[in-house]
Image 1 (cartoon, rainbow, N blue to C red):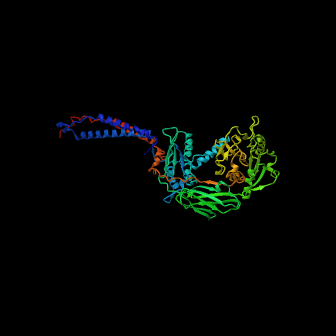
Image 2 (cartoon, helix red, strand yellow; image 1 turned 45 degrees about the vertical axis):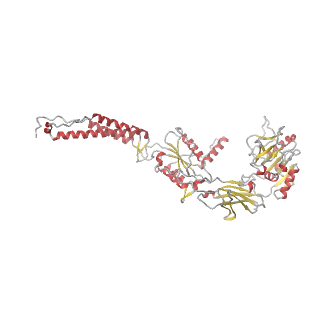
Image 3 (cartoon, rainbow, N blue to C red; image 1 turned 90 degrees about the horizontal axis):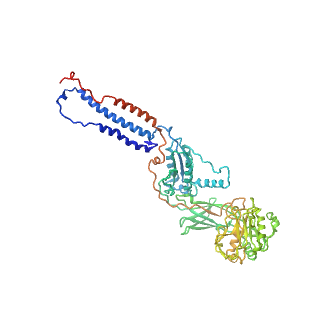
Length: 614
């Protein structure tokens, strides 16, 4: 039996009222032998028995009247349709993260999740509204909304999510497939709550179908303004799993023509076979060490795009056992030197050219249309130009910084958008681009390079004796390639066309980089495009560093939900409100009770003249 307002069933205590009245009106019967009673006719004794039966029928009718009234107040549902049910709002969040693709006893966990979700959808009525929200869509939708708000776009960028019928939600559920990374379930729950908060009052629930026993620790307690969240899972233990955690191509640098390519792989298990496959053919293989790491070396490749697969032996979770790897093999960049970079920089460039890492170009600046109209560089400064990178080395004389500012202002005009870079201090009447260079502060002591997110690790710990102050405003600046110990940027770059600016010239009087072993790899990295980007930007078609999601740890589920668990989500959504039927039944009961109560309560005294002794 299903009730829309089960709290009203507490009124069933009123059934005790007619029972109490019946018991209070009962007279104590004392049996005594009275000789004259034997002269009464048998009809009189039968009438007394009928009276007692009638009183019991009256008691039953009065109890039934109270029960019918209480059932009507509790909105009893009859399983004969759903025409009178108020529609319910239900958001069904399905955790379709990478773990849902694991296979347990020959079936994917996602298939078991579908069964739980289908059981819930089958219990709904055709007028109920359902939002099917794969958890993987929460992050992308939130990102789109952030872009829309940041750009003040009058047209909403996210796809408007509309409710569907349970039947259509069932079809969409069947097309759901696991993604290749963990899904942000908590974000999806927040979005589901925000969605239902805008709905009118009525039955509202958020149901989360997970693939393991995890639960949202942020579930609100006692907040009636938020819809209730019900979390379930198939109740199967997550299988043991090993997967590829991380792949690094060539130490994070683009592979070069004529050099072997190194693939460093990190796996979540030791002594596991790792293979690199290209067009169905295995080209390299090894096994992981006790730390779960392995290095595969590929033969030198021709310039161009290169792609393949890193794979392990399959286990229960196949999705993290095979990772695509794409990179672009670059020919040695052609480097043109403008100005005077100093003896140390020229020596490093000659070393790179001798090793085949770069090709020095002695052509004049006029041969490059990008450099047309660029002012002359101040003495002691230099500009290293490649097809994709402009590397500016500031002068050793701080008094010449104004001349460098003019050069950078001209280089900033090469950007496809409004000027993004300028080393000149901004003028209030005519704001300049969002970056500038200031002379070193007096008395500033030396610092170390602390973070190098865009450089080889060998650059960490470089001692910087003096450095210019790089000031910049938000917008148009990529994350710093190197930061000092106090958090100030030491190397900044702009988006393509890439312009990189060092805060210190490559001179031993400013930094010990020229006399350290990091000089060659750091200078080579500064002359190469950043990892990532797309075709047409002069960078790689795919990141040189590929990170796959960490494979989920085995989790013991809390157990599958009990049979009929959907009853705790929403009242049974199939049925017809029995209130009209109960109203007619109550009317009939009251009429019958009134007719019976209007009859005589006892038999009339027998006529002495008609009675005769037997």
